[in-house]
Image 1 (tube, helix red, strand yellow):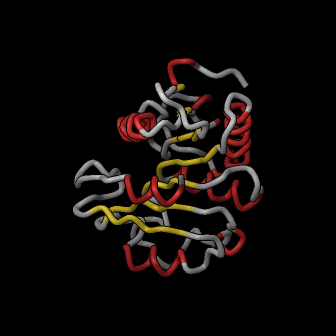
Image 2 (tube, one colour):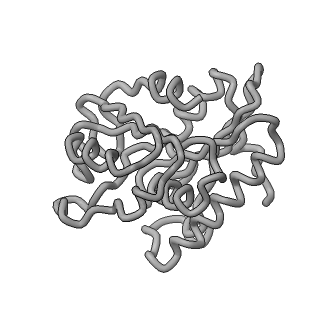
Image 3 (cartoon, one colour):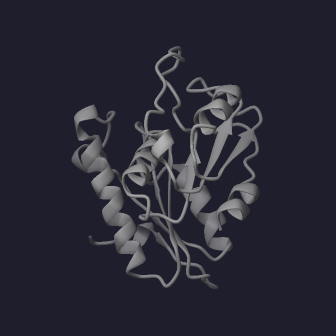
Length: 199
């Protein structure tokens, strides 16, 4: 896999660890959220690779198709392996919304792929459909995971997130963001607890 140097963030004092970050269904890897997270992590010495999912390579806008989810996960796996080839330490995986869901599914399929997961606004269920949870793979998820979640997210309340995380056999941390919705644009995001937990 070729790595776009514009999407690779290298810290001045690297720890040897790295993370692949990807986007949600309506965005790309140049989203303000991913850039802000990358800058925070780089300041902590973590090398960051932002990457587009396969569906975004095919078209600049529009949501992913369910039939392409396996291809999206394959692209994430390739990105993790490419970053691992550049670093001496552990490689983590993270994403926003749909990208985070694909990251968890990939980690459930391949438990040794990533050292940990950093997930933003996990889409627990479609808005208005709490009885259609996206958690079937949670009991197979054995990768340490931090979930950063707004308390006004229509894709899942904090209460439902807490209950869902109890299904995961690995260590998990839920980091609530006050006054934030699914896009996490409102509210102050403090990543320190999640980063301390994972790294």
